[in-house]
Amino acid sequence: MYNELTKKDIEDMQAEIDHRKIVVRKELLEHVKEARAQGDLSENFEYYAAKKAKNQNESRIRFLERMIKTAKVIDDKTSEDEVGMNKTVTVRIEEDGSEEVYKIVTTVRGDSLKGLISIESPLGKQLIGHKTGEKVSIKVNDNYSYDVTILKIENTGLTDDDRIRDF
View 1 (cartoon, one colour):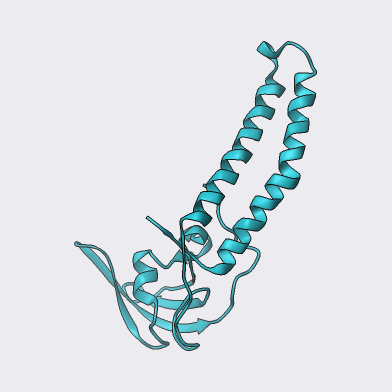
View 2 (cartoon, one colour):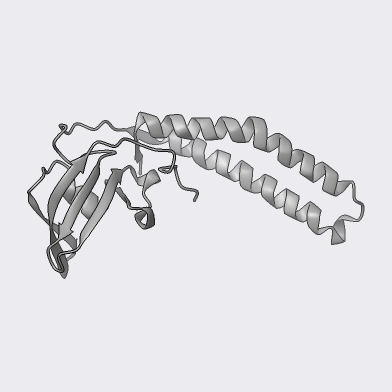
């Protein structure tokens, strides 16, 4: 399966890879050397912790490289007045009248706890392409769906807080 990413997602991932290779890798190798120099490795917690951190960094680099390699680059083809990629949308949930604010993002940026909703989520899929004032039915599964009304759409773009999450 290919990950749908924007050019910005790929640029951010490549920047993280470069940082991890150039800066973090050197720091972690130095920590391993310092811990190894402390003597007996069989009871050296610092050595094992440094090795673990080094291995986690290498795993993250491989993960990001694989994501880029298998990515399907997507563009937002929605107009300014439609819900689309990297736009913030305010909706009213018709069941209880509450209002929610979400930003529509790619899967790798999705974080529902921060209001970042993936374009592949049930909510994201249904909202894409709709305009202010439209009522949209969100089908969660075969047994449950709910209606929302789009109250406002803002083209806010990405911020530093919309980072690609760690896996």
